[in-house]
Amino acid sequence: NKQVIFRNYVTGYPKESDFYITTTIIKLKVPQGSNAVLVKNLYLSCDPTMQFQMRNVQSPSGTQSFVPGSPIHGFGVAKVIDSGHQSFSEGDLVWGTTGWEEYSLIQKPETLFKIHKSDVPLSYYTGILGMPGLTAYVGLYEIVSPKKGDCVFISAASGAVGQLVGQFAKLMGCYVVGAAGTPRKVDLLKNKLGFDDAFNYKQEPDLDAALKRCFPQGIDLYFEQVGGKMLDAVLLNMKDHGSIIVCGMISQYNLVRPEPLRNLMNISFKRLSIKGFLCRDYFDRYHMFLDTVLPFIREKKIVYVEDIVEGLEKGPEALVGLFSGRNFGKQVVALANE
Ligand code: NDP
Image 1 (tube, rainbow, N blue to C red):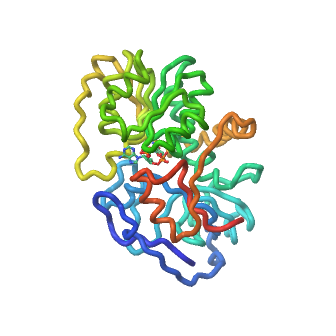
Image 2: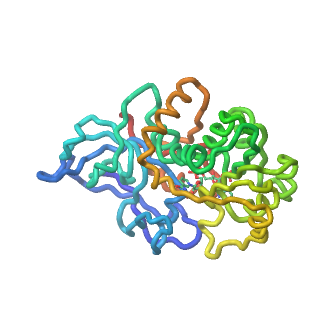
Image 3: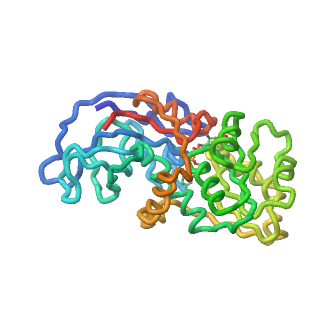
């Protein structure tokens, strides 16, 4: 059983060398009497929040830290090989928390979602039909729903969550602008994902000026995924009574000390509403979310861009690449065909 092992706790930016690959021998059978399931992992999801699990501190979002010397874990798509649980049978396809290894023994199979096989690619259950998709849906359909004509800004817009938030906001009739870190990503937003405008934040000497250019009347809704300088510039460009949905702040995750913000008083001056959320509080909405999103995919009202690397060996590089913007769309590691 090939595995990605966590070498040791990380301070600052994670590196590929914080992980190594080993192979162990395992029995491809669930131990007698156990109600675990044994799965063959097919696709693994690279998620920025895995950074919090690499630290030797209690994660602020409550996730379990990785254990040095043990395989890391995250969301993935898998096939049941053997089951001691009455709700799962050999051959079932599932998604949920699994190990970064070829085969995993899942001790709490109740946390897995069954996949009803359809015309949609299985890898989508790491992204658009998995946790990032649910995150985008919860943000825009449950936390703050923009109105037709609202001006919506999204940071990290071409990624797993952002590309969907933008497309949902377009379907709601909004004017949508995204920020991303390369010319190719900006082109994707404008020419494939239907954003009204986009800019490369790394090439803008003045983020405040870039936002004023895109939103001369100001921003009604900001979907925050980056924090730091971007949030500071956005605070200057929000309309009075505007809303900020705080999904994440990736620019701050690897810093030993978070960057100070200068423009926080605008929250009061502009009477802003700021609401944070964690996707994991909304897994009970999953089936409602599928009912909304699957028709959008089938009717080609939304598209989804994935960046798939092949093989467990490529996993660490893909995972740490999230923090330098190496991924083009949802970052997935493919292990095996069904
Ligand atoms: P992405 O697929 O968007 O990948 C991360 C992207 O973030 C990179 O491609 C890069 O894009 C951008 N990025 C990396 N470092 C920086 C930086 N220093 N400054 C600005 N941008 C940076 O990831 P996800 O869509 O999976 O996640 C996006 C955000 O949503 C993250 O903050 C994540 O933690 C959060 N999240 C929150 C959840 C919740 O429950 N609240 C659930 C899921 C995600 P670029 O090239 O454009 O810079």
